[in-house]
Amino acid sequence: MTLLEIIEKKKRKNELSEEEIHFWIDGMCRGEFPDYQISSLLMAIVLNGMNREETFYLTDAMLHSGETIDLSAIEGIKVDKHSTGGVGDKVTLILAPLLSSFGLKVAKMSGRGLGHTGGTIDKLESIPGYRVELERDEFIKQVNEVGVSVISQSGNLVPADKKLYALRDVTGTVDSIPLIASSIMSKKIASGADFLFIDVKVGNGALMKNIEDARELAKTMIEIGKRYDKKTVCILTNMDEPLGYAIGNALEVQESIDTLKGMGPEDVMELIIKVAGLIVSKTQNIELEEAEQQCFKKFNTGVAYQKFEEMVSRQGGDLSKLEISKRIFSVRSAKAGYIAKIDALGLGEIARKIGAGRLTKEDKIHYQVGLLLNKKVGDFVEVNEELVKVYLDDIDIKINEILDCFVIQEDAVEKEPLIYEIVD
Ligand code: URA
Image 1 (tube, rainbow, N blue to C red):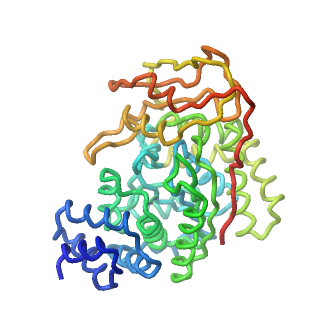
Image 2 (spheres, protein in one colour):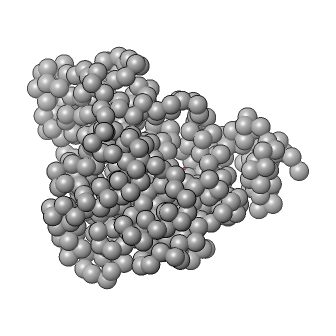
Image 3 (cartoon, rainbow, N blue to C red):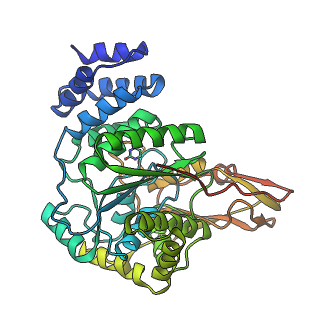
C-alpha cells in the first residue's frame, strides 16, 4: 500500500477502508509522507467526501495518534464546548468562566485560527504573559481550584490533528464535513469531558454555508459521540454577519471582558445566555428559563468576570497590558440606508490579511490589529458615518475592500434569527 494509491482511490470517489485510513494517519505521524501528498489527499476528501463509516475510522485513527487525557482527578461535572469557527466568535472566552461560576468544571483545550476564522488560543495569547501551555498536573489543579482553564492542545494530544489542521489552514482544505467532524471529535473524545456542546456556525462567515450541511455536520458529530458514549449536543447558529462588533485577537478579548461585565453586544449576549442556559439546565436539572436567569445574574454581579480574571492571572496573563493598535483609520459609508448584509467571510479574510490570522504556516500573528464594526445588519447608517474602525500594524488594506463587504439599501431590513435549532 502507498499513500499515492490512497490519493488515487479517493480521487476516483471510492470509499477508503479502515486499514487505508490508519496507514495514512499512522504513517503521517511517523513523518513518512511529504506535505504535498497529504495536502493532495485532503483536497480529494474535500472534493469527493467521505461517508459516515470512513469519517468514524478517520476520527478513531486520529484519536489513537497520541495520548488521551484522564480528567478523573477533576471533581464534579466536566463540560466542554467547541465551535466550528466563525468571524468574531469569542464565545469560549465568555462561556468558559461563566460555566465555571456555576460549579461546572471547564478543562478546555482550544485551537488556533483556521482559514478565515479566528482561534481562541490566538486570542488568549494577545494577553501579555498568558501561558497557553500548562503541564497536565497544573492544568488539573487549576480546574479543581478555579473551575476553569483554557489551554492549547497539549503536545501529544491528537498530534494527527495538529499536523492536518496546520496544513488545512493554508491549503484551502478546511471546509469539509468529514475533516471538520473528525478534527473536532478526535480532540473532544481525547480530552475526556462528560458533556460536550458544539456550536455549529452556519452562513457566509462559517465553514458550513447552509443549514442542510450544518445539520449533516451536527448529526455526524453526534453519531461519532455516541460510538464513544459521549453525550453530545449541537446548536446551529447564524454566522452571516460577524458575531459582536470586534474581529481580531486583542479587540475580541476586550469585547469579551465587556460582555463578562454585562455590557456586551446584544447578539453575543443572546448566544451566550442560550448556550450557557442549555448546558446549565441539562447538567444541573433545572428549567431552561431559570438557568438563563441565573446566567444574567452571574454577569450582573461580576461573578463571571471574576472567574475570567482568576483564570487569566493563574495562567500568568496581565489584562492591564492588553494592547490594541494605535494606528487607526475609519471607514465611512458613501451613502445613507439600512445595512442589509455584512460579509463576514470578506471581513474575516481582511482581518487575516492585516495580520490577525495566518496566510502561511510560518506567519506570526499581529495580536493588536483588527476591525471594530460600528454597525450591524438592520442598523441605519448616515452618509459619511463610520462603518468600521480598522486597527493596523504594518500591513495596509484598501478602503474599497472593506466597503465591498457592506450592502446598504433604502428599505428597512428584517434580521435573520441568531439561533436556528438544537440537534441532539
Ligand atoms: N474546529 C476544529 O477543531 N477543527 C475543524 O476542522 C474546524 C473547526
